[in-house]
Length: 317
Length: 245
Image 1: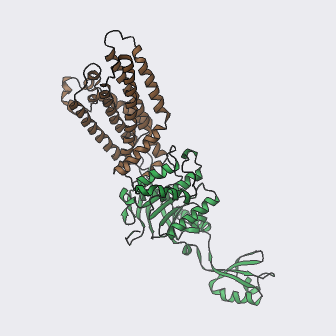
Image 2: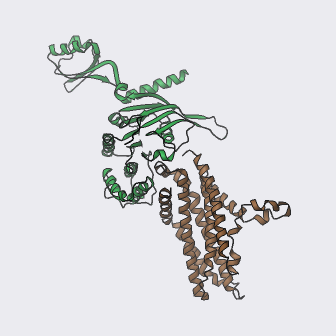
Image 3: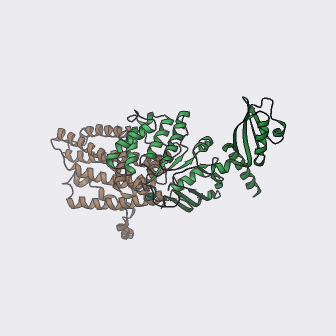
């Protein structure tokens, strides 16, 4: 693993301005984006289409020339080829030379990544199995389905045993089992100390695996930070109660909000300072408290609200 | 550096060998080569020389078609299909990628020219009882010229699509062989040393009608080849390095 003490990925002041040759106005695809990803974490990069996520990732990996900003992976300038040798990247909808067989393709990427010759075959075999493509080594890639190409894309990203992995929509095109496999794979990578930068539209996937997120909109960072801190609703607590068949007792009903009753379980939220009194009231009414947790937004709701707020702010400007 | 360039070149070779165009062009050229002895100019007492001249012309056209079909579309299609992402993200520089692609095209063209020259030798042996070893000098010259042309094609393809690449490459070929026409007059003679001429590679006359070219000339062809290729690939790297993918 890397010995430098800074973040595994550091993007500071990323800026990309597209300049048309004639006519059309200049367009800023990314403006002043800062992202810092700690070692051994999974960091989600979210945003609607056109938010600048892919451009930011491409600048990080030297595929697009930045107009400005600093891009570092494991302390090295990642816009230079030498700074990407410990990185694995899976682009959105990965494509491969169609004439190659699956194992040949992995061997090619292993050679390009500088994997020692005697390690190429064992790594190829192990990775094919890890992504669920065992037995397909000799199949030419023009016979692969989109989901299989997606799996191979993950395998090629891992062929050099990278310390940092950048995944752009890794679950796109996969069936539910495949999506679960990808999720588990990311968690395994994190457990092994690998840093993962995940760009995804699948909010459930991000919510399930990410430690931190950066949400982009219109080329800027709209929100960032620890997922729990972003989603927990300040000052509200969610309480789940069983055994209140007659409905919530009067002292509770006056304090509870967002009440839902399903299968004999009542779920409602109350202000943090009312939690003690509500639990006592539930006990007095013969009910049983099942759980007491901070109220947490779904990422979908948070995301939609944030984008709406950003849009309003933009209109104001 | 070669550890990254070589696998890219081999991938280009493998890809090219899967394309039907390579075999179609080669078979068509071989059939034409077999038909050379039936040309009406025979009977003038210079059959061998005519055979060599036409054979070299066929090699040139065959190699040109192959070079343009392989080099013009290589980089644009990899960028369009985004297969280049996986390569560059592995720490491969854009220069290594371009040189590897060019090298792959050069190897395929070389293999095709060698195979075709072998066929021509077999025909020559069967028809005239002479394997005509001098044809290999001509084949080398054609190969080197195609190497230069493919380097220019790769340079242009770094920023343009296949149609533009083919047009520009043919223009380079035309200009490269038009020095005496374009600056033949006395007023422009001072420009001759700076003219990007490809005439160095035109050794049809000594191969077809003479005794071939001396080893020193072959060496000078190699120097010109290296010079042109270095210029073209440097331009390719500069252009491709400024491009957003």
